[in-house]
Image 1: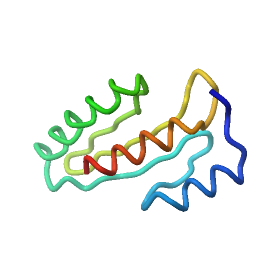
Image 2 (image 1 turned 120 degrees about the vertical axis):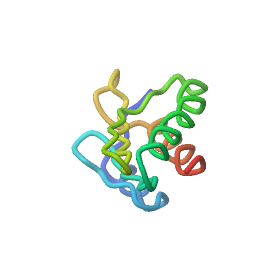
Image 3 (image 1 turned 135 degrees about the vertical axis):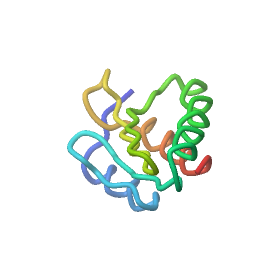
Length: 92
């Protein structure tokens, strides 16, 4: 899978609400209301991640789940990262 250039990354970010670039990854925080909501949200992310064989880094801080996506094997951002971000948004 090919790494995306800066212009491609910015264009794809423009199509995703709330996602930001953080180095060689994209990041978004989701407010799920409370800890149980956060855990349920993380559980719901397992299916699309497994279907794609592409797994985000997840951090739970009570009501907030922070999702970080990068293609670690490629060392940066690929089209798969933005596809997964859109799928996560649809779950949210």
